[in-house]
Image (cartoon, rainbow, N blue to C red):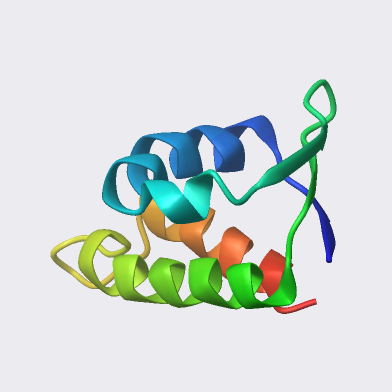
Length: 83
């Protein structure tokens, strides 16, 4: 699966996924770092999507259950990885 991340999505994954699940972050096969194009194995994409779903529950909403900035980034990653 080929994905094109935004710089914000990539930075979020680098900071959060890289710290929590470095083996998943290292599985991002960089095709073109200048444009954030990556090749992902379908199983890796599914694992990252599952991680993002779990993180969205924890980080993605404010006290009033409105989606915050982290939630918006995670939702965009989840949508992107469902392709």
